[in-house]
Length: 141
Image 1 (tube, rainbow, N blue to C red):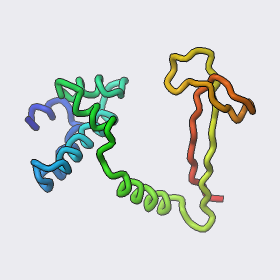
Image 2: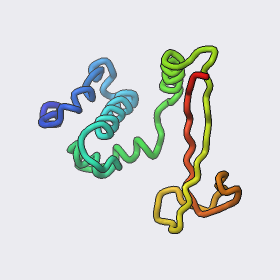
Image 3: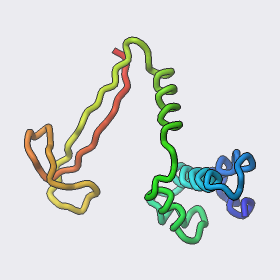
């Protein structure tokens, strides 16, 4: 399976790293396996990074496993969050480091874009049909 899956897909090589160290029958193995597939789909070629196109590019046949992985959130995020904090502090942390949290509202006329709803738009000072995005910037003062 591995050799065929990797043919013409060099970006998938990292997907198999660490595979042998996990118990093949365990849920931990499944989570590790699907995590590597998902990340490979995100960083691999192709313009569309949604579940179905990625599953097709990864030669999974069906997209059910990948969809379940994303929808169910069956992983423990705390180790990743801890590592993110350690790396962020190492890169730009220190006594003068500041975390800036900002929201931006993009007004929209229609409802077809993802996340469009009647919601408070801080830039307008009122409720409007818009998309709202939040950015976190870790900076030094």
